[in-house]
Picture: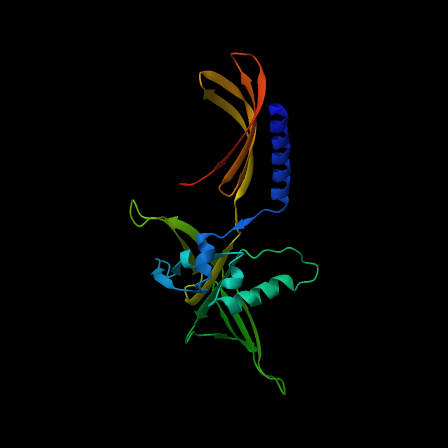
Length: 256
């Protein structure tokens, strides 16, 4: 009778695992709770650095620009721009089940002042490593015509850093163009994290010592939030028999 009950419980465990994986619950993360207050898209430039080649890099901190998929609809300051991004993401024909992960925008000003252009019979010309300009002179009733190409690399790098040994590691973004005539005027950034999964299933080897008996075997456990259900099939070395077993537990304190 006891073994029949245990087998029924194991079958219920399998059914619960199947149901949970088809309908996973979503727990609210600390990031999501923060998103309900305010998450900004406008990123503060916390430092500017110019290297020996004259290339300027700006650095922003990502920490305050992160929320979950569930928190997207809760954001206040960033609600308008996120709504526009989501429409852009989903309005394309044939696109299904797209999930926004991040959005970044950099605004730059590029100046070239009082540079000398070369002249030919038909045009004025300017060229450097990034910019090529060709102004065709007017002819008859034709106005002057402009041809130009611009070639600039935009670089973005993410890295984590501790300010001191015991400090929390924080994430920063470093953005720089390869044209020394470019100045970064502003940044916008948002990163969306998926909801944390609070379910999981594991197959494990199991060993137990209970009242002088040593039992070993295999088992399957199912975690649903703080609840853990586990079914085992164990070998009793003293009697030589195999026994099914079932246990359940609830995490009162979960330290990670």
